[in-house]
Image (tube, rainbow, N blue to C red; front, top):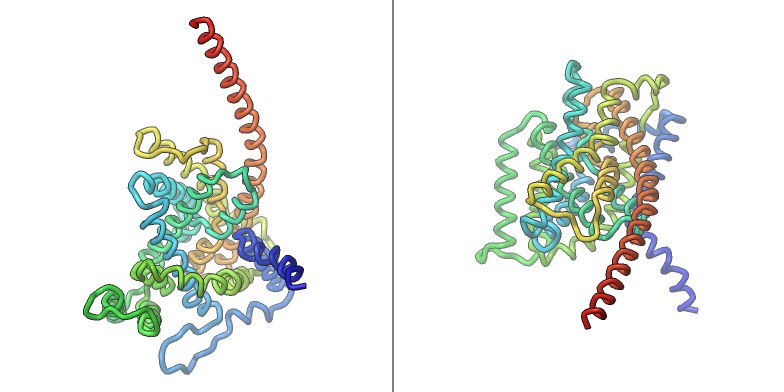
Length: 411
């Protein structure tokens, strides 16, 4: 009986642990949130109602702020751990390994930003250029998993590395351009706390076994950033970078389920409570809407492909094994799925709720377009690649037979 129960549970466990499930769950939460937001006014109030108004210390005042500023720090902690792991022993551990995803990520951020600026150059909304620069790790890798063998392993690793670097770039953009007024006193306190974290983790005089001391210092670092004017959630990345490598798996094991199945769904529910404008078509054809959609759907794959092509042409980098250029362009369409960080940047770039909603709707339409285009593109080229493989095998077989006959003649 026990074996039967285990067999029944295993498929569910496999599904939950699969990155595909996270992507599908984000899509589901987004659809639910948009339906509720447009059917009842109360739903939007849940995320925007103020609390802690009389708190003795400054804290996030709304559910939306709590999720974006505090809970998302745990998401960035996980992203930072992945970045550190790749830098130490993965796809980013050497210059030759790192340069292609770095170059591709740079192209995938630069071209969409320039496209957005081109659409909004003579408007007051040009400040939103950072919105189409991001790639969503959960969505893009999840869709790549859905495509199965149509996306080679080397291409999936390249996509993951690119998405990680992309997120790091988005974090830097947020810190430098969307952080608002900087309180230098709190920023100085954050520096001191970070030095203390380094001391307790690495110096022989203060080195302390990982536990409550590091947790308290990490929370203090978040609080200092929250009050400094710099985006508080990036404290998660900084904590990951300064945490010993042997501790990272323990932290990831402790938080990854909460991040994937609580924090990211909450983020999706809170940030996609979008009241669809009655003139939705007009909103999407506005300079903000067009800048976001064209930047993500077209700018991403074009930028990634062009920059990668240049790096390989100048022999600075090389394609992963068993990856073709047509597949790399398809990877660029997957990178155009910019959900989490794009919405996050939108909340910081625009103070007007109306333009936040326009940008969010444009992001969601971009996700849909990139998703459909990616699925169709990889299905089409997979047939073409199979045909090419068949021709290559036939040529190799004919060549081998010719060589065999030549050897016989020589004998």
